[in-house]
Amino acid sequence: MNGLQIIAAGAAHPGRSVSNDDLAKVVETDDEWIYSRTGIHSRFFCEGEESCVSLAINAAKLALERSGLPAGSIGCCICATMSGDYATPGVSCLVQQALGLREDIPVMDLNAACSGFIYALETARGLLAEAESPYALIIGVEQLSRLLDMTDRSTCVLFGDGGGAVVVRCIPSAAHAAILGARGGMQICCRGAGYEHSYIEMDGKAVFRFAVEAIPKCISYLLTHAELTLEDIDYVICHQANARIIDHCVRKLKADPGKFYQDMDHFGNTSAASIPLALNEMYENGLLHPGQKLLLVGFGSGLTWGGILVSI
Ligand code: ACO
Image (cartoon, rainbow, N blue to C red; front, top):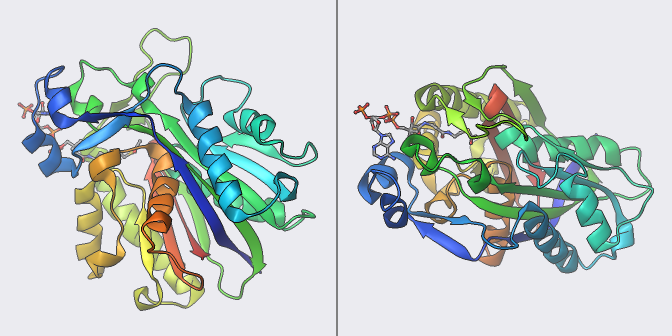
């Protein structure tokens, strides 16, 4: 059995931070309503030349630089996104070109919405099992501000833009655990490029109910499968959609809230980018050290869900 070790992380966010008070000038809302229901104070929105491609390239460059590896040692590059600049080429291919990654490796985008980063890690683990190189570059990036109807206060206050990347190494592991799933459904929906109304629409209450069921189920599966308990885990990093969802799960699991990292107060919900943005922030704040075990858990549109145990 093989598992994944994260050896470096990087991230990039747009220069413009948009507070709840800024949004209150555009739609009928206020900081108290947004923060009490979501835990979000502000988020970043791209402007000018900033886009998924530039965020992904900057995040990936930083992660690669911090890994100390040459670009030629990367054996696979996957970018999880649902808001890439182009229907094709993928963001990953433009990262490949910018970083000078090898031509004889798999390079692709993957759309599993907010579970995308988990799906990308587990896909890379499978690909690396057969590859010459044990290293993969995994990116999660979103420019959700392009998909927001700024007249719909029930969605435009929730989402933000950003990108994160990690370099992982495939290592022999006695205790790897991962699970990927999906329930199907249109509870969160956004039409593709070319449609007149291409904005995120969501049944918030249905998503909330799904998330608080999926996250504890996923964590319990990973722990049972790896023969571990939450005591053995240093941090749980859930997709950063909403603080109330995470708090609810912590109570359900009777867990230590300090183990469940949260940063949505300043990033908002950045879909596939939220977990790698959190990982980078934790690295930069000195929270991650070799030998630690992390549980990463995603859930989102399509009612995809998934979790993976990784080491540092
Ligand atoms: N400001 C002020 N009032 C608002 C706002 C706003 N931004 N948005 C909605 N309201 C109003 C509604 O119009 C409604 O008013 P009414 O009672 O007069 O009709 C009232 O607030 C209650 O609206 P609800 O939608 O019932 O609010 P709820 O308490 O369910 O909270 C929320 C909404 C925060 C979206 C919640 O359902 C939730 O957290 N859901 C999970 C959503 C989520 O996390 N999605 C992302 C995961 S998937 C992914 O990442 C792609």
